[in-house]
Image 1 (cartoon, rainbow, N blue to C red):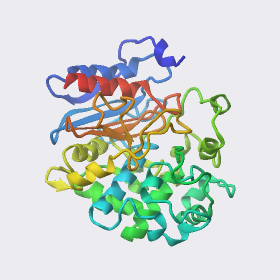
Image 2 (cartoon, rainbow, N blue to C red):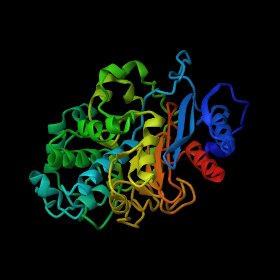
Image 3 (spheres, rainbow, N blue to C red):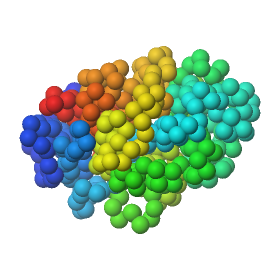
Length: 391
């Protein structure tokens, strides 16, 4: 049984700062309650931001940046958001598709010729982004986390690899490889490294602090990543080989983001750094038809296309049907509120960003104490439920 079902809520022990619009007081209460859970998910430091119809209706933060609780969490605190990064990478690809630079139906090899090696010549961009391409992990060579820091080395390794299944016949979460595939597509098509593309085409125009590859100047604002109090038991999960490959070669330590080398690298599946406000502005733009504050990221048609479900099979790693779209998880299991057209991406430990185009709501949540599960976090679910109940 998850510890979340056994929690004993205590009185909040931190001051919650920021604002919640009238009618959203319960969201503030739910956010504060996460600091008093009395279980493995109790927040140390966190931020939550919600945009609706182009304006911030919730902008909250509290707690501390470090496990020792010596540095207060502020509105502009940055933190590694793990796989929440994947949604930002997917948005970069969607923007290039919207500009006519690529089609989701294109073979990846059309833009990255070397990727065609060993039976991958027909893998489409859509299949790669929806975890159907057969490259869930590195299988042909021993890989270290340090290898991730050498872009050419790691993408050339992927280009040489043989898929683990006939592309398009299975889906299993591409935990780390997703980002290098999506990122190399962005690099080949735009001529820019994915981190630079995100900075120049998303972050700076939108005034949204989201980074893939964190400049050193921002180091003083980065919170310490606090690893889960209990590690997930990989053996007990009884995963198939395809899923095991995604988690073990290499196995990435939960506190790896505390190393400057990790923060500086570009790992578009896992090392994005963001504020909750930054994520909410990005997803607020998506929820608002592609624009926010007169800045247009992409067209409404592009949003419809990038959120189209590509597979309804159970994911071999996750064990449920995430109904993958073009790099986004759709909302079949209701993690992003009640509306089925909502979509986004969550990260290991609990962070998430999502957009609901029907309610015109974009949400960002970041925190430094990672939850105990590989997938699923009760804090995020409780916040989303309360937000939409308040609407």
